[in-house]
Length: 297
Image 1 (cartoon, one colour):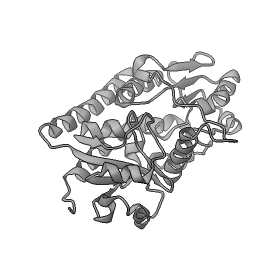
Image 2 (tube, helix red, strand yellow; image 1 turned 90 degrees about the horizontal axis):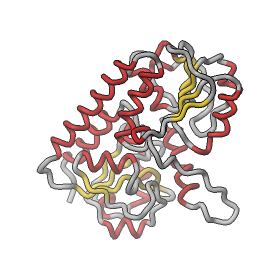
Image 3 (tube, helix red, strand yellow; image 1 turned 60 degrees about the vertical axis):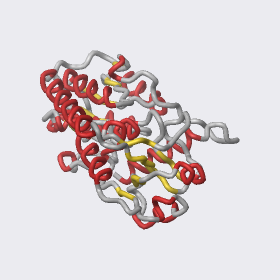
Image 4 (cartoon, helix red, strand yellow; image 1 turned 90 degrees about the vertical axis):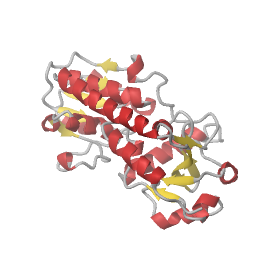
């Protein structure tokens, strides 16, 4: 989990500063998500019911497990932390999968959460005769579309539809509970040094809106490196600490922000709010707890 959040942070910093001298910009996420028809299929036609599947993203692994298909997995990323896959070989990360490690597992199907940085690697895997399903997941609608796409690809479309409907029901319930609740102004912190936050258009930004919170981060980037003075000026009522790879007490590096100074901080227990997949319901429940918990004033 910590390595996953750390990778998100590294990619964020690289994307947020693409014009600095000597720095190579990492390709941005796809503009068209799974719900808008952005799913790609690379390589040969896959079997109707794959038996040896490699997952190259923790949220896709979560999806396979939630579909009741954990038994078909033969390899996952180094970021996967579920008990169901604890004994499986690791084949790199979702940004840097190891093609030799993937091929060595003799998969008949590979699942990948689309990211431009790894596209050449997946093209290579596909060129070696392994079918690849590339699923771009940007928002909640894409999470639902992903559940259906993966279920269909694994030969169990009805299971995919059931999972999607279950997630959609959790989202609807969370929205309903937020009706009439006064919005809480929130700063969602992903990294502290530098300060990186979930901005407009990010996955956590959408989750905050679902539970009735108002994201105070402004600007045009979903994962900006954010000036501390802007965070101070935004004056959030609550800081959600998603920097779970750092010691909890390190949040005091941000004591200039009034909410941090007075202790109005909620530290997330895991990375579910950064992991667009079936753990969405858990993420919404924890964010609701954060909003409803009494805060120092």
